[in-house]
Amino acid sequence: MWPLIRILPVKTNFRFVVFAKYAAVASVLAAIASLFLALYPLTPPCGGMNCGIDFKGGTLLEISTAPQAVDLSRVRSELGGLELGDVQVQAFGAPSSALVRFQTPEGESSEQAIEEVKAALTSALGEVTFAKTEVVGPKVSGELFQNGLMALGFAIALMLIYIWFRFELQFGVGAVVGLLHDVVLTFGLIALFDLEFSLTSIAAILTIIGYSMNDTVVVFDRMRENIRKYKRMPLGELVDLTINETLSRTIITGLTTILALGALAIFGGPTLFGFSVIMIFGVVIGTYSSIYVAAPIILLWGVKRGEEEAEPLPVRT
Image (cartoon, rainbow, N blue to C red; front, side):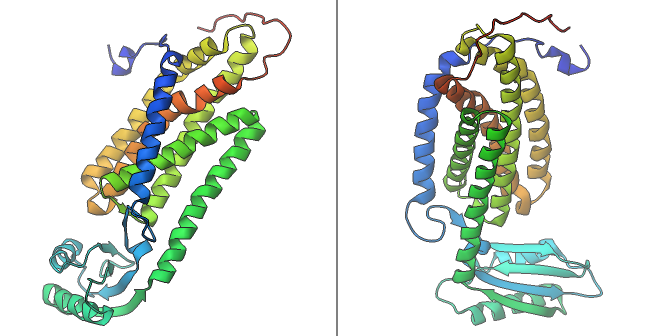
């Protein structure tokens, strides 16, 4: 019985296509709910999502406590009591340097908030040198938000072109619909649990797109092989056969990724928690979309099967 991976069945015969209609209804309803949560209320720049400093604007301080190292946890706890909204503290360069980002509280000027933060840091850390102070306005943050969305759209368009050239157009459409499904539901997750939406979130979603596309390509590649092998097999049975043949690989890859991300969520601290949660959700939903979004679209569209008769191939052991 060891390794434990042997308990996974070598071959499965699940009938995925039977539940494709129900899964389609569930996916459509989930996508509509996600769009509502992410967009309502229609207030720029992030709608119903919790905008981070990257998209909302704020203040950046570069501090130094040379020759001693900066106590990042103490900085976070000290600034956490000032009601500054989203606060980000990260190491920068030498151990004695750090970057502090925070939002200006409502009703206060940026100058007043900066002085409060400097006083709190000096009180907590002793002698502190403030090397740089920058205020990021909403205009710059709005441009970052637009550029982030453009990056997502550009990535999805490139995936469509790649799948189109590698397979056929219907495969590309299936893959893109699956990617859009994953992205929309991820936005819904961010809005539902009030996770911070920042450039790190954009990076997580781009990674999800790559992961989901990789999983979809594996399914499509095996489907193309089966189309050539079983030219008279009904397309629904062929889709089920393809998904079952790639299922063990999909499960093993997904579980391995989730284990790594789970450790990152637990031990990575508050800075990486949101990123890890988004990635875990993306792995799960990306696996689902490969089975119940991308593949069924091939079933609806159909594929060229050729006119020659199928020749049975010897079974590989």
